Image 1: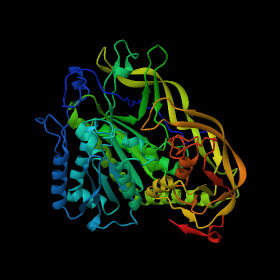
Image 2: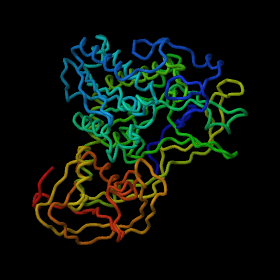
Image 3: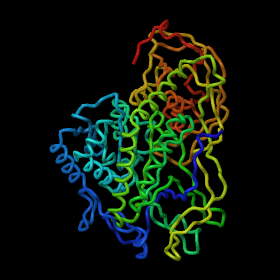
Image 4: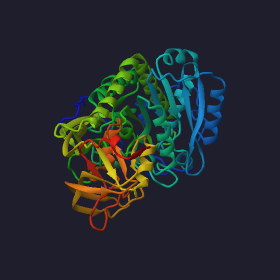
Length: 548
């Protein structure tokens, strides 16, 4: 299957997770890689166009929670079009603030809303500082006049205050907040999702930083290479997403964002993860997956226009910090102005995409024509050339690499969209999670016998390593039609909701974001999965049910 093909002709770079090993600390919490002095010619200092707490040549640490809150309170007090709310608290009790920008301090639902969030990962400080920079810019009257007549804006500058304090990627737990956007196990993601569902933003921008150190690239060049691009970007890549939404993200927002970076002497391209090699097989760049546990994809499946923004920065402490923050600011300004310029198109496209998913859920006749992609593989595009900094010459050069793109995917498993999923009364946790996602459901008031599809488990494997707090359960199953007597209190999740695709990916056991995979719905001792697919219209009005 081909999913919304894009051009990757420009040189691209990618994300590489990990901390560096060279021991010259720039913060009390991290050893950092020291860049060669010659790179000053490539990553020239830029003057930040706004003031933020952390951009100060004499500062040796990054913006603390206290400094951030003082900064935000000062801005809010001075501006009638900005208000601030504490939307929740971290695991260690730190405040998670959100700022709201609207004309005359009133959100107009006829305008699209843009959501910007920073620092899901605590060791990515420029992602948070860049959001503070855009808050500073938006406090200026001229920017408000230009934007707020066309759009509303919500900004969460620091999603992970505990990780920021500890200067580590994960939360205090130490689960990764950006791997918790399906199961919502953490207070931080619960707070985000509650606010998100309340306002239903049309555009989501998620700020991060990627690794700037050479460990993963040792097989490239004679002495290795370093990442080159200031900014990497990627829209949601779940293959079920509307092509019209992807088109706005890729061909308007990201394309213009790259152009605006270039005008400031900054560079931008598409976001990739890297696959390190210890042998001489081709070094591989993989565009990040469409997994719904990741914020970029979970927000995209609402549906919304959802874009990841990553600046180079992990592992280099405060080096190039002003440049990194200015890179974030440049992209955010570009996105905001483009959404304002195309406000009607953005609003109408997202509304249409949401309505299309709802209508698919109401259609119980053309099951063979409407399938949800459950498992897919990103496409191998063969060899290409991409830009890195050659550590032998300290120059930007193109190197041969293999490229795999998630903008084109091969379907491994797809299933017909059901009318509803049904679970027995014992699965209250699933109901709580999906309710937090804004999903509505019905509960049966008395026993009812229904014809449904059930899962017949063909293969089951338990992971031998823990991942995000769970030993994941990998299942392969077929579906068989049965009549099941459902007890009073059973849950019915109809698919006539804008998050219908997300519901399916949560329920289908083979999905990489499935409740079965993460043991929220366990496989029983008899290899049963108590999730059922109602393929025919249940005539809900004729059933004895309550609505939630």
